[in-house]
Length: 382
Image (cartoon, rainbow, N blue to C red; front, side, top):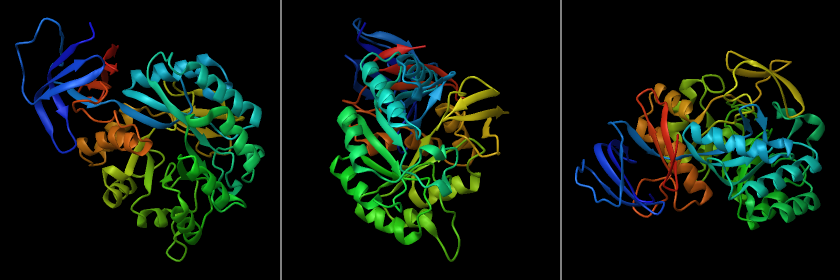
């Protein structure tokens, strides 16, 4: 049945929680929202009892590399589908398939595999591709493999866009590299989100990049010049620019709770995005993996290279939501950062809110932030 009524839910709205709401869904879209419980429902609607649990807009992960033992850089459709399935199981209804720095051949194969899967996703929908590299600064490489890092190459970028076209939604670069500003001009023409990270940019260089069109910071505080009172760097530059939004890996490892609260205080929920930055160990547990050409060990949920460098994360979106609330940020703001803000940044006009006319991308959560079910375009999963 295409038409559904979700009853008896605590509805998460941007400014409040409605304690016992009813949501009507028709043909994959939200038809209407009522702030009270309705017992009388027309026969053409399937009833779904939310049992007083939280109903939130489907979350959107703009930065994920893998899950359930699969790395999307392997160039297979199976890896993309597994991430799609894992995202849906953890409260995410759309995602950007995210690359790591690699050879051109591996990157193009990844793009081709994404193109083959779009429209056939097993779970969460692919909203596009996020290129994390390869135009990154070796000095701030983090887990990025230095042998694949290089200066911006416009011929190479043209070839990437010829293959991917409008699928490229976000590109993370180090703008201080030779050719960085020219690359920003090109990416701005392509109308993609220009993000900065794995960068040693000074405050002045970052300001120049933000003025030229960069508008986002990938995994803020990680993989970049740190703040110093005589050398504020790109983080302070981003804090000062109203149009610049920030990604946060909230996993109790990458960011101290006080830093998360600081980011939230300065940018608000509309300027901050929850991400997983997950590698294939998400959903797998501790063990040894190969990611980005490196051997990675996951112990107690923390992924590190052999030298101790953090290597992405294993957090899921529903866990990130819970941990954000644990820092003292309100549930409504945390949901905004997981759903509404990424939708706005990516220009997904029909996603990120529970309002009439929006896609019926919904997640039912219990009080422990476990996913009861996920709904994508009105179809319930789980």
